[in-house]
Structures are given as C-alpha cells and as structure tokens.
Length: 124
Image 1 (cartoon, rainbow, N blue to C red):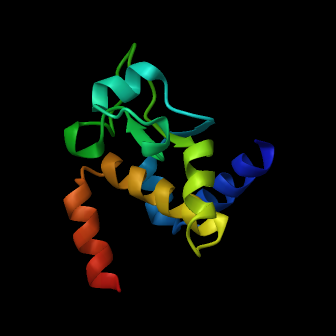
Image 2 (cartoon, rainbow, N blue to C red):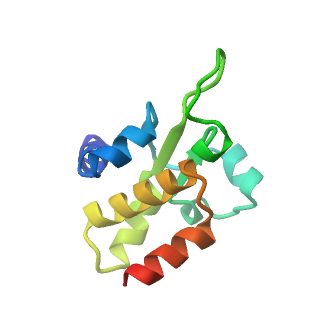
C-alpha cells in the first residue's frame, strides 16, 4: 500500500505546477476497493470495475471556494482494481496510476468522461 501511495504522490507531484495549483487542497486517497455504497450509487456490481473516483464539488460548480462543513475534494484511487487492470495491460503501474489520477482530477475541473476521451483521442 505504501509503494502505491508513493507512486500516486509522485504522479501528482509530476503534474505541471499550474495544474496542481488549480487542484487546491484536493486530497488523494488510496483504498483497496470502493465502498459498497459507492458501487451501488454508480450501478457498478463488480468492485474491480471502478479504478478511481472524484468526490466533492468540482471547480465548475464552485469547488474553488470551500464552505464551512464542506468535505474536502478528494480523488480516490482503488488499488486492487488498478493492479488488476495493470496486470492485463502493457503500461507501467506508474502510468496506469497517473492516468487514473489525471482522469479523476479532470472531473474536478468539470470534464465529463466523454470530454476526457475526446481529449485523449486528439492527443494520440
């Protein structure tokens, strides 16, 4: 678990400074799997089906301003599903973790999954 957290921290630290600054006080948290309540709310039956999750109020919805009692914005990285994905693909573990992290931060910026897929497709 510690190695996984270190890789995630290095991936975040490797992002451009302007990007990290826009993330504000976003927290990156690693768990083995998403909670059952999270999976149920997303309609996901297989716990290996969710690699990461953005939780909070994104910038597009006023997330730059925190309010009393507001939980911090958080990116969840689910270790076991990420490891499972990694073992069946050719990317390095660091690349998979960075991809999931950036994808979830994209939600913080208000981007949808479709938006991010279009961005990735245009970068290939």
